[in-house]
Image (cartoon, rainbow, N blue to C red; front, side):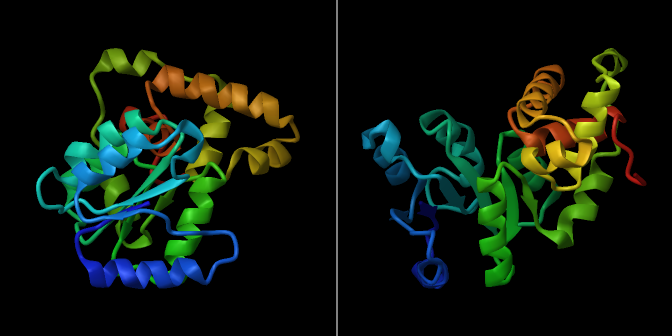
Length: 214
């Protein structure tokens, strides 16, 4: 599904996705309100795997609706696809559960790769704002938050998530079972109060668990 109010840009994305054998752009909406209505009407097994969401929409903005979209379709990954590289927009989108954040100036291969990456359980962040985002996350949370530390194995897995690895790759790298990785990742999310990999990584940098020079 794509939520984007510019028909010309929707056509570009639709053309790019139509060239992929394993992807289909289903519903397209110019407003968040219409998309929400469609998600409410869709059966559970008919909801989109991925939503491409613009932030600057008429009516309810993308940021305002992001959390609601996640509730209406909890298994759907949401990739913010926007022109905005403002600090507040980026951080809010990640903290509200977006699985990725791409700028509209991204190339078609970058967009397709981003979709594939989040479908594998990874995260995708535009390379041009990644460093800036991490620098913004230097700020530490209050001291009591630092007590929610991870075990050595959980920290190791969080670092690999930050490198863009998916669970299967982490299992191969650490030579442990995928089920074990899934269990560790679940514990990481619980301890960091994160909903997905991007928000866990962001919390890791904020807490100082992850370092910018690692």
